[in-house]
Length: 265
Image (cartoon, rainbow, N blue to C red):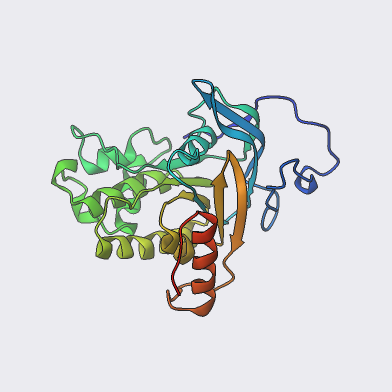
């Protein structure tokens, strides 16, 4: 996907935009340099209902951020705006570099073989070789000539990840890509995503409903509520992380409480 930097409404003049204090209190500092994605005052309504309400967000280079919220809170709407797929948002939205998206469904074209799906739209001297390398990195080199309908759910999602990462995005958007997978395949996909992220180092914004998934993968977990980022939780633990770590258990309870889910014990 081509890079985009769209100023949707003129922002107020600031000396250092990364230090600007947000009106709604939901600004997050970028990590390790200028933000790859920067959003200010982003709003979006559908049928008179305001879904995003002057939302502020920054994602730093190489940062892995998880976005949680109740159904209908606007998580996927925010991802679509960052991907340049929604031109009806208002506010300021800047993405510095190429963007790639992996959706809930792999969205592979059934009439094209796996290799052709991954190389579709690629530019450069060797798109086929680049696509083959990406498939090898996700463990699908031997499925390059397979038809998408012959793949398992996990294999199809791996092909979707290969298609996204072969474009070397600075920002990778993941819209609940593991929600339809069984538990064991999901764990394997978590390991794969972390390995690929460590290799390519894009900034990642991942939408999920799974608190444990967010805590296993992300540097920060954000909660979207009322059209804004209502809270954020740093996850200061090295990967791989163990679910029974006391800090993760504490963060899990805090996140569930923020999401309005009761906990026992």
